[in-house]
Image (tube, rainbow, N blue to C red):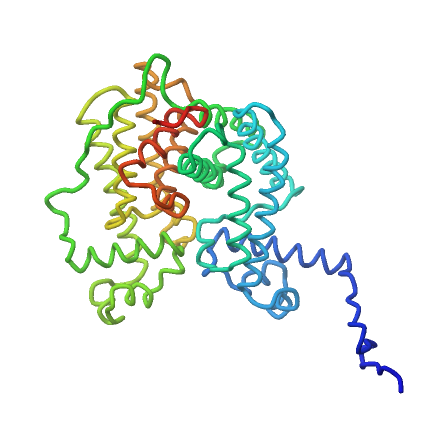
Length: 419
């Protein structure tokens, strides 16, 4: 008796042969991934829909499902492809012998990739602001592998203690992730120039010649009119801020905010007209705290460097305490367009003030002659990324955050670890 053959031609001993994907299949799959990245970067993981991805390609949602089982599968594939792209840039940049040269090579490679994206010669990278909302093990493992590869570019990889390496790697990678937030302010022809200035700033730091890291002055970021920790409006603001920081605008649903506070949806709407009203209030509260830090530091006086260092340290220490965190400004990318424009204008005003303080420091010599527009974005990114520092520096005491995380921002990634 013969072995027997299944309907598809496979035998009991030989599994069915899978045909290699055709060029047409791969082209369509790649087009879907590009559309998914655009949707992810616009709306985040939870805000992306198969309908939106399909509509960009004149497809119906079932046309996407033919290539990807569901939204989560598609998002995971988009993130994995982006991580492969980062690994390629890192690998190409790791060949230099000089430490600063490796970081500089990566920054230039990133901007060159951005140039190719603008010309349609390369696919854009996904934004990783809310990648944790996907909760996908393969993506998480690939991200961790990419992080380790990126950490290998840093100055003093072997000499720096583990927590110093991890803190600097997180800060530097976060600076790269923040570039899309301000890249539209740069002409494509100026990408090499901007890359050069950003690389020099990151490796060399902000402190002017003849000056040293100042002792930051303690600042009070509260005022008499602040609600108490038990006031309902403040509790809703904190809960919404924490959820948006972790899972983006769409991940912070009314249901999830209410559940975090163990209250009903009815209680939510008793204190808040709409979710968007609460989100706007979260941003206003964050901007208010940032302005308080700036004004308090300026009232305390000192050089431009002292004002800037005191402001940044106060805001980052406030952020890592976690009880009343600042809303990550990266969340601006996924809020509805109806409220995004005004919030972006308010954020730009804060960035403009950082640039102004940098100008003061350059004038008095305490700040190096850096590009203040780029440096202002670097400062914003550092404050923004401090919300996730604990993921990469387990065991780092809050009192050590300044030495591990803030000083490399000011002294440069080529600086030695603080003893």
